Length: 115
Length: 112
Image (cartoon, rainbow over all chains, first blue to last red; front, side, top):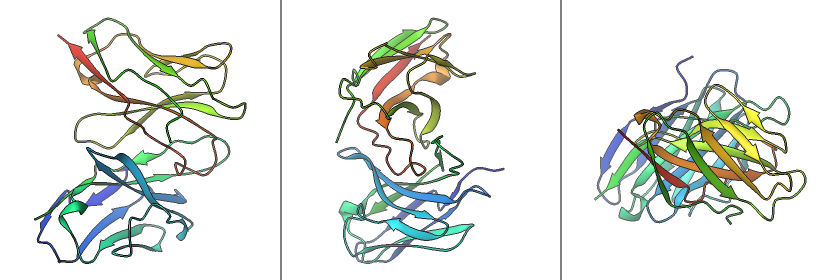
């Protein structure tokens, strides 16, 4: 398996524009997570899905952020409108929960710069 | 909120063992200790986890004290590729990674 695949790897956009980040989880994994990493706040969980259903979105910073998972192999994180403070590296991760073992597999991340 | 305390940075000579400490004095009985690392510009990578017994895999060893209030991650023969930020996480193994709080970690620099 190629692992968790995120696109694009880098995104530069102007303030006010819509940004869409994409993620393909590992096949067979039933959990998908979106994280954001900044120097100030470190790694923060934004939202996670189980079997394509959003379970906890309490980490989503505000209504400008939305995430969807239309099927088991694809998820998007959208920011509309984008602001300079949204600049960060966004990671997608997936996992399979057969029991008590917790290992998350992370993608390479999308570095977002909003100017 | 952080349940672990780690030194902000450490150095280790290449080929030597790297011992990364972690304090988790408030750990509860059903919480595990997980270690992840993040190499520059990459996503975090799982290393190892344990409850109360010492654990070893192909990447590292995890030594947990008998009172479970601290642990040490051991990289037996550090290489330059082990330079990364190492995160010690204490949490209950519930759903996937939703309860992984990464904190600030320890930045390990392996020196040639």
